[in-house]
Image 1 (cartoon, rainbow, N blue to C red):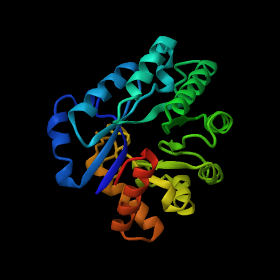
Image 2: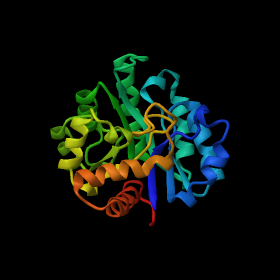
Image 3: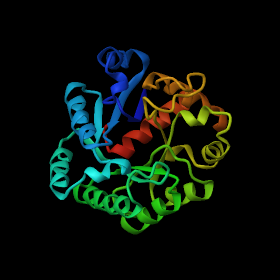
Length: 256
């Protein structure tokens, strides 16, 4: 079975066929999915998906592009929702200097506050980092190292930084980008980092793998990512599927 560790099925891209698509997951070998909140509304919609589907779990948090919405009152509400047994992480949280929708200082403030919440709730974190590799790493090293662990979603940093994250106990999320011809650095990361520290993800509806690049992504395309990792690691796809399934359960502290 395959575990999609990062999806956004609350996105409007799935509005027309969400129920049909999610209803087909088991027959295609997708055993579990973590839907990831990215905004206040996304967190609430993720909770609804967790309640509706037994194989969907939730990561609840606010993306750096949306932290302008956050208040201390909403943090209290977030803590209440994170107390659900199907809430398995705080995320997606982090820093995004590509879109720069929010100032860097406010992004860092709420990143740290949400990491503190993860420590309080004893939950791992799901980290977003775009064009902010050093600041993201420094924030995690200062405020979360040695705490509840987590995953660096859609990892795009260097091999050297990947090794440092692994030393600190974090997993690296690998998605559709691994199938792109120009993904040289990520392929080097996958080659260098032990498979026991990698998990597979879609970030759907975004980042569909080749040959679906540019189309709507879904968990049904995860075999493409697994095949790409297997080729790099010189392993059978079944072995990559098994190990990443086990890794995801360790990451989110779920029974097998």
